[in-house]
Image (cartoon, rainbow, N blue to C red):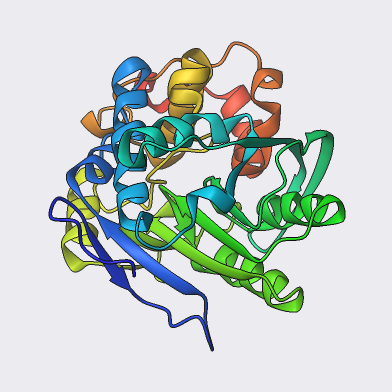
Length: 297
């Protein structure tokens, strides 16, 4: 059973029959992670690990450690630190499989994903995956490749930020292959922005508590800014890139003076943000040609 732990709550919003079996997890670590876009470096990694430990604590009575392995989706799956969380919460080792994915095209409805590398040396009946879920295409691709190598009966997806759309697509894929799937999402089941990147508490399709909607309204002056940015994990893995992406967000939403996006650095070369280009491509020409709003009279 997945239930409350005392320091964290798990709210069931799906029954696993007509819709994905999904829990919204609420705790202070996830609130810190999703409401502080200025969190970077060691502090960011620490908040990620604390959040992952809460996820594992919720799962501890249900999944089978002896039959479970992780599927690490490189590279951003590393920030979930699930092996450390499992060791701390259960005392068990978590074997690891790895797959590298690359988004070749992104839209609000779908993403095309390429796989340059995979290593599945730890076959398991149950997989644990930590990843941010947008369209769901990355996890579907990873599971398809894993199932080509090994049988599987159950998947647990833990996500600091995930969408209803993505969960639905992953659940449909698993149902077709008679694989059970359970989702643990942080604070909300997000709607997905038109650019395929924005996961905002203010999206009309987001399922969450009213208090989080109110908090996001105040934080970003009513603008539907992504709770996790456009490249989650870059807060610690590529902090300079993260600051440049935050600058673009601040420019697009006219939030250069906002404390909510305080860590910004204007990009010197748009090519360095090529993997997130779809998030701001419609405004790229304007961004490149015009002085930033923060410098205009």
